[in-house]
Image (cartoon, rainbow, N blue to C red):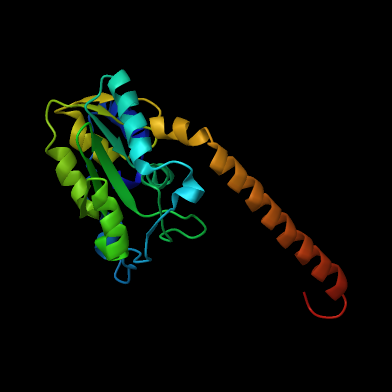
Length: 225
């Protein structure tokens, strides 16, 4: 299943198997065909992160990203890293335990942004927020159809982070520019609001740990821990 193997691994397997006169079939989910009680995709609600926490609007981030794309001479950026998508669009969710992310993919050009997502997690408020930025909302699995329809594009795509099936859908008809996700670098440079919020978070965390340690020291021997 090419969706659960990163592109670098898939390409390495291609090279190794070619010498053995073998080929890779990566479009079928064989486990899925026999998984009778497979859970459905998460439907936990997503929400927009207020600028007082993000410190920068999604519009500003998209403008800076497009400047980076222009510098790399690319027409399109295909992003699959959930933390990068959450950071870029200032959205959060509960689709993965202990990670405030939303299951999604994003395609960005100089003109538009396409967000592939389970629409069940979006309410009217976040839909309005996304549409106000010109984000086009599409079904989650449509990313593969859209990627396969691309022709003659220079696509910025980090092969270590993107999956092999997506790479295969784009590689034959397009030029893949393998660079570290520019969002990862931008995300690492914290703005003053993010720095201040991190300080506040550490204080709250420190208080929580201190209260727990106090409780633990005073309850040992009094109850089963």
